Length: 381
Image (cartoon, rainbow, N blue to C red):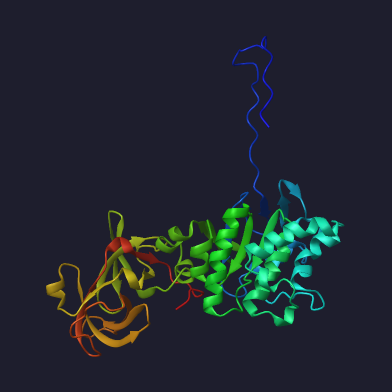
């Protein structure tokens, strides 16, 4: 409906209304215990971390099933810390969440509407829409024990959406599915988020899932968020070795930060080679690791001199076909120094003459594709 027109004789002075436009509040705000997190309306925000990082506890506190433990919880600007879970307007889907076995799939999805007192006839349209959106129309009359694991997760998700939650919490709900089913549901979650304008707080241990789904990613550890930002930014520019390892596979080469030239650090690696990298949290004169992604490393079965300036000699240790790519394990290092192992990815089918275990080769990478980071005991290896 269009806004009413102003009276013809209304004043036109620019000073007629000096009130500032209202500030849009985050859909969810979490504060306290050193952790601060805002989830914007319509945002898909992912918490990425290993088991025990506190992701599930945070989601349970937001849902109201665990004590907030001193956290300030605001939903649409209103405190919800003392609000009963069923009054928060929040949906929660966890891995292994069960459907009621005595009800059909359609009746399970309709349950939140039934509990709200919605008439049976009024439930049909939203339930039918959700069955269609989640690909469950042919399973509507089945009991849960007849569903495949992927279909059961879809039904649980549809049941959570039936209540039209202000906030949807996803606690690694795809963790128990096989890879094809997990990928299919990831794409459907992406589509549902866009189509329904959902606000989602998601927890996972899968970096590929975070990269696909999230607008922003937060990495919790030691009671605080180590880094927040778009997932590709965290992948390319991690703030710590922990973040680098959680966002995907990386080579971590230990060494000493010996000098700094403009915005690049000179790192004397333990394997006897000096390389350059962007200093992130590494400190000159101290131990660090150089993190470089396997796909960022150029590789050829030629000498380092033939590859060009900055190339390092290497020896092929293993050639491991991985289907969509080839994984190479290489030995690098100067004579008389302890060797380092380096993982490199190459596209499947890439022509690599003379590629076999024991072959001589060369590797190189751009300094800005490598990050000098403080060693982290919690970083994946």
